[in-house]
Length: 318
Image (cartoon, rainbow, N blue to C red; front, side):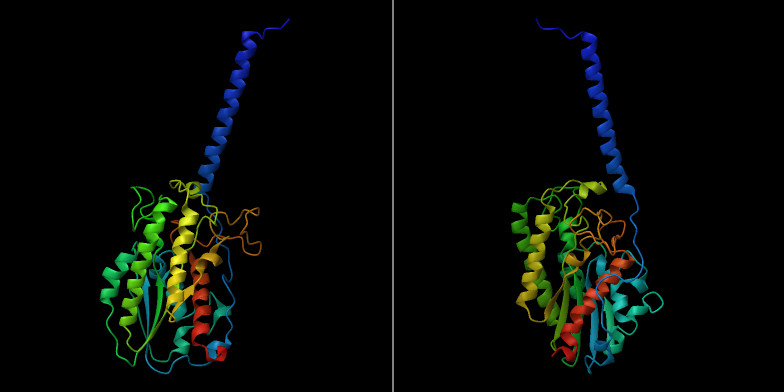
């Protein structure tokens, strides 16, 4: 004979289940809020690869050189004081802050050096064609160009899901949509690269950074209060593959791989169980807006650019 459960016993079971659900929900919401607002440590000391001093003990080019910046807020320098942006650090090192990088600067290896930074905050690849390329003069045959470029990142992340994804503002798109839009992005970047080359009939070298991932490859922008984007890691990888293809297409376009170096320094930098965790430097290299680097992030980017420039210009490598 079956024993019937008293109604009040059933009631308490329901109450306990509902209470457990509420506790779990509040815990999850609290965890999400904590991750969105907590300040991650930037850390101290050098960031990025070591750079030898020997390549900077000789001239890299005897004639006139123009060093220009093109692209978005990374090259413009949002996220750090002007003297600590990667563009300025490439030109002149701050020996007081970065004593281990003393002498490793472009002002030392290019005796006749002119500079101009055309980069703009919040700009996309089409803006770089329309608003920056058009402002760059055409130089004489005696001038060599050295260009640093960051372009394509804003084409992926704008406008953070506040409107439907589209070509040039892909946030939230599917991988299928990205196949077409990333090919279009490649076309715009190709136009930009060819336009830059035309500005320097005497020749130029373009150092083109790919796009980093503030989620450390996890693909969870919702952790920071942004809309969920299921295919974000795959879309980013596709866009970076297009940048790599362009760098392989032109011998004077050199890929600067900031994506790999920044993995493990994003929003999961202090989580030891993550794949890209850096025990020796578990620190955050991004500015609070997640689009731009912080001071140590710019220091790492400066070193990555210098590493590629040494490969191109240092005669000791030949």
